[in-house]
Image (cartoon, rainbow, N blue to C red; front, side, top):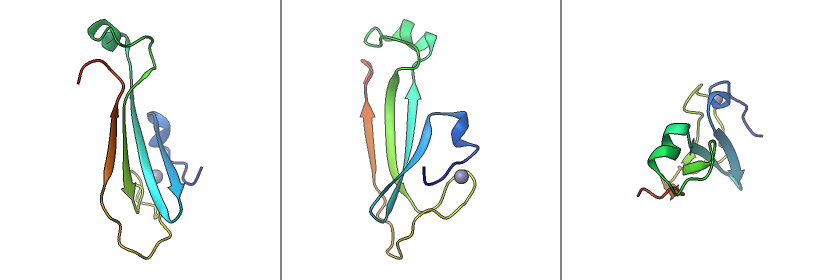
Amino acid sequence: MIHNCSSCSLAETWFEEEGSDVYLNLNRVATEKDLEMDHYLEYEGQTIETVRITVAFCPFCGQKLGSSENPIVPEFQHHNFGGRK
Ligand SMILES: [Zn+2]
């Protein structure tokens, strides 16, 4: 793990390094309430949505993460695994 943040341990959040780029991954996981609302979901704790964005710093504690001197191109990926779009 490239950065172990106390904020990240509070949720399904982690960092990934690919080449000189650093990505922040955020998962939203299913709660009991989500299961009642969305019958496509199968179990509590299942990943409903994932967002992945490029970052240079940790947005929670401010530590510098990227090693690249090149400017970051802002982008994100979003995946929805639930039935409700
Ligand atoms: Zn941090």
